[in-house]
Length: 304
Image (cartoon, rainbow, N blue to C red; front, side, top):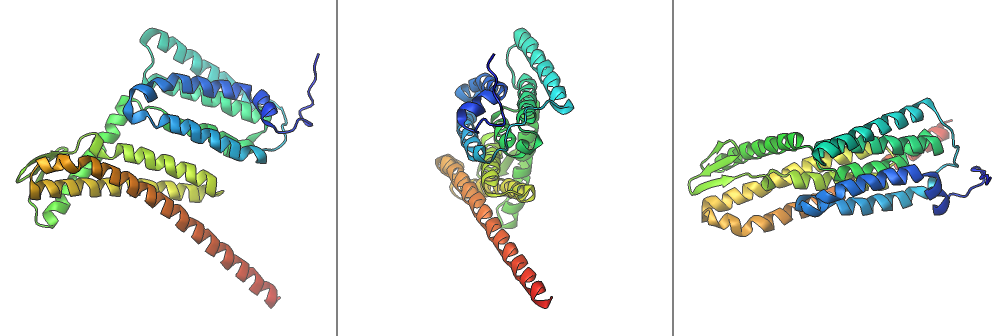
């Protein structure tokens, strides 16, 4: 019988792959089941990018992992049981009704429970904030259940339409709102699913989570960057729809079609640049805070 002393196993990819085999299998199963949406739904094509970013994050945190401890605990055993039950529920539902976004939630919970249990068993809780977070990043690429997505999109549509009407009237362009439809003197402009800002919101959150994970150790700064990314996405899409409505009011509704796609790409560029600038600003604030604390400590030591 071959015996491996885990205390002497170096943290190389071969050892990491062997020790975390259940986590790799769970992540692979989740990617395989979700890949159908990434292939057949153009709005979900970014899922493949998420997988690549997840792999990059794993390579970044691997050198800082602690030595393996290989110890079962009550939380890890509980997570294994809950994860297996959730995967069984998913398999039964899939056999009866097929794969749906709602059923993928059960699969995602089961896979993440097994991944978390594996990390707890191998490394302990200290690995959850680094290697665990890299695995959890896959959740961004999951399709939302139709009920949840429709609720988010409808609220975004109504909010954008309401704000556009107020702004248009404020600058002297007559406009009325009928749900997510904006009535102008030249015709109707609809805030459809694509104009709701849901895709830019998804991409901004993905960028903020990835950048925050790489640059910031504090969860507070990561959360701050995430909130800023949401605000930037909403602001950018509001500016986009306002521009389209103003073009439609001045040049006619047909003019909206000519600038629709260009305005959409502009929002993506604005959001990406805004998230990058916000991350740079936070780094500057951190540097200023560290410099102030150093000066304060030096002053206090001089007084003593």
